Length: 63
Image (cartoon, rainbow, N blue to C red):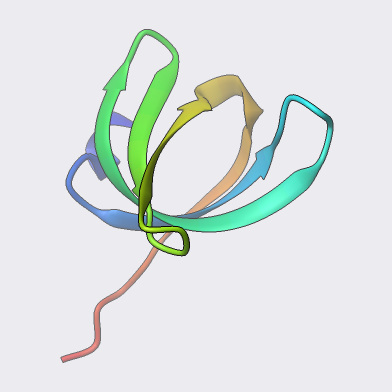
């Protein structure tokens, strides 16, 4: 996950409540099994447990 710091990615995430969510986030940092990111849908900071991230895909920017 460290390689995505500073990048925008799409993730599929399993929430604490067992709900699957898909989010587009900008990765801020990855420390100790936790990813801090800005959720682009909500325009708000979020914290994700790396073990609960089921899939990751980099978002390509089109110029």
